[in-house]
Amino acid sequence: MLTQPPLRVLIADDEPLARARLRTLLETCRDPHAEVVAEVGTASAAQTWLREHGCDLVLLDIQMPGPDGLMLAESLQHRPGSPLVVFVTAHAKHAVEAFGLDAVDYLTKPFRAERLQSALVRVAQRLREREAAAQLEPRPTEESEALSIHERGRVLRVPLTEVLYIKAELKYLTVRTAQHRYVMDGSLNDIEQRMGHRFLRVHRNALVAKAAVRELARHQPGEEELPADFGAAELESAETWSVRVAPVNEWLQVSRRQLAAVREALRALAG
Image (tube, rainbow, N blue to C red; front, side, top):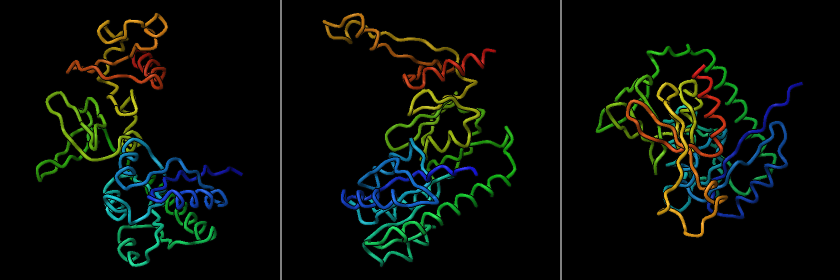
């Protein structure tokens, strides 16, 4: 019998003791299992993390410093492929509003492991339903694939064939075409999951269209950028790699983690 992978969980709660208790409870849960992939103390930090990473579920407190958990859940509603949300809070008064935001469950602290386990079962079922629905959807054609960008009160449809790269910067994504730069909200990880056949991950904050990559080159810092006592070993470790993106001829940094994959992709494209 095939073993299902554990649910990937992000915990968002401003109380360290509450996060620790959630971790402990999750370790006792079985069928489905759950794995904590990250913890944050604010909704803003959760939103930042989700722009560059993916998970299946957010265990989300409501009252936190800055934007509350309800605001984060509302923003996730508009992102394709967003994680599911289970609220974990000491306040029962927000339940109606939470379910209006498509929350899978609403757990009121304190709760037992059995209650959390039942919520995980609902999450797993919802994920299976989402996957089944996605398989029934017609695969988009090259002409139909596009990014929807909200700009000055209007919605622009930017075909993927025109996108050269997408880069995560501060709280937004920069979408570069040959003629324009657009700013959009969203998750780089979500775009990679949905449209990764077109893009190459070169850095944790950048996707480059495979058709736009022209060159991979090593950059060695100039003398003015380095301390006077830098030796040969330190100089080699300070070198960075970048890819040149055509036709704008901009260079984007390649992380060491992605370097081997970028080289392999370039060999495949050349072949």
